[in-house]
Image (cartoon, rainbow, N blue to C red):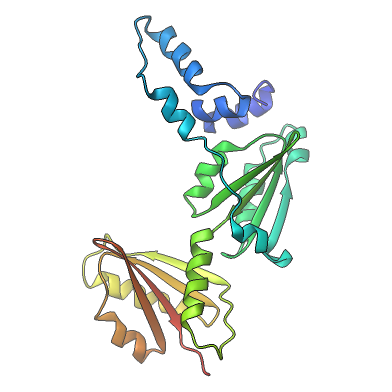
Length: 240
């Protein structure tokens, strides 16, 4: 793809050496050895470098989530026609991602594996699974951690409720000093309705917050992930 001068200008700046090697089917260890050797004739690679790279490319199993997803949650985007015109599809892809709900899955169809995109969407909370069929790549982008969180929260609710949270708002207050975390959380409550979950990343369990949530008709479940890191799930109470 980078042999095309238009695509090279549009895409090359976002492609790392690792990604380029993978896309081209070139052994990364050999490529890095030749690149370093061209800079320094006395270059000697680390002995375990090749083994490390091979371990990073283990085949992933298709997540069970993708086998059970309902058809109305799947959005498909084929970018091959865009690439054939010599246009960068990045903005089209990001526009499609912006329209997704947290429980939706985007299936991207491409003629090559878009490795740089994994990093971009990974920063937005998306995981990916890639299938290759002949010369066709199908990449599933999904928020597995968010879906699991919502499903686990649903199990904690009474069986009389039909729960289907469609949106998740994430808020990270770990770097804020008191009382800023509580202020920020309470300000965000106006965006949390019965179809929305507020996921707060906190440096401690916010014990002082619980009574204030109760007064406003909300409830919270806190989970300690590690030392100085709690995930607090806040939902609006429902009338049963």
